[in-house]
Length: 294
Image 1 (cartoon, rainbow, N blue to C red):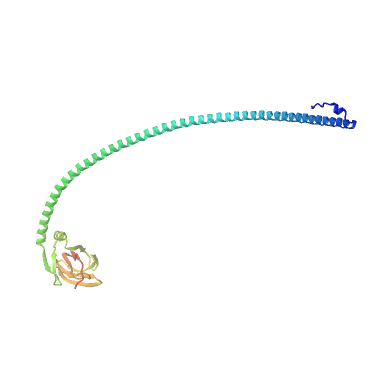
Image 2: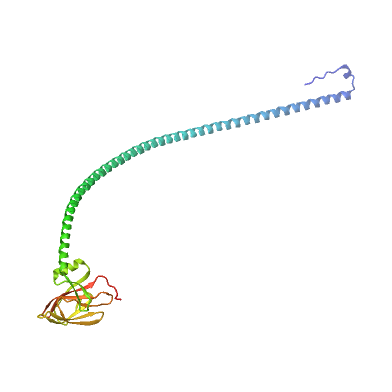
């Protein structure tokens, strides 16, 4: 606070002036006291606000610390749990891997065993089949040898048969038929007819007609016996071909009875080798190749 010193000159001032100065002093002093009081009040309020703010801040910091600690503990628990799960999964995975590896090894060993057994079985089967083939080859070789021997015998028989056939055919004759056409070779018995069949030049149909007026189918024609004279070896015969009837009268045994049918350039030939009572025995000779007559 400023100190006011009074001098002699001041004392000599008038009372009015001294009175005003005193009041001015009092006013200034009160103003200064008011300002000082207000400043102290404002400072006190500010200190209280700072203390309150500090208390709140400390509480918040404590709460934050507590929350952070709780969160850290929760996170640590979570991390521990995850670590345990990871460890368990790792252990389980390793266990499964070991089991899978063991199963794969067992399966591979089983497959190898099966392949070896199959190869062994195939080898044994092939060996057996090879033995059978060799045995069959030996048998076939023996058969071939036998066939060669049989073939030689057959050749000999064929040569002999050909000789007999040529001899038999040499005894056959070709005569002129009732139509004036030179006939083929004529057979007078079953042996000679067999020789003609061996030649294969014509088709031959043997027949026996034992009743008069009873048509009999021979080849593609029909025959009917009209008369049989055993004493004179003669007969009458009706030939039915192409819906036509032709009667051959007073024919003798071993005489070629000739007639034409449609589609044949050469005549059909009937040869009767035996004449009995109401009975004739013979054969029909037809061409191998049918061709229209010119």
